[in-house]
Image (cartoon, rainbow, N blue to C red):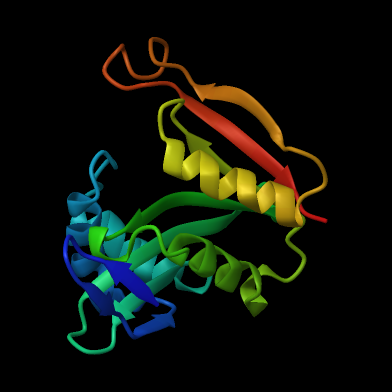
Length: 173
């Protein structure tokens, strides 16, 4: 995988794997570096890496062990055929190289996602990278463009302190 720095090209050798509970702190630090993502508590990320490890995936630099990407996801308890993608965090050193798509495809291809027929996520209207990622998934693996509606409203759910979260649902083909 290649990543462009301002004046140099650096080749990154990445290891993709499911997280372990001991990755939770580093996941929390990665998310904090990926503004404007909402940071969760370290405890939340520890639980994601423990309880949802089979449906989460991370990418670490094989050379220095640093965490460069993480996707948290889970199968919805009320709809186990639906994978809900909670967060996608890609370090600036690895952006623009398709890492988010690779991580997402790796999760979808894992044994933990056998029987998954839909992918859902929430995205704010102004998050162009996330829209590009999930619209690409819908074009390449979906049945149609995917459905959208506001799941969490800026006023009703966030008291005006955060942007509305739009639910994007993709039926997989």
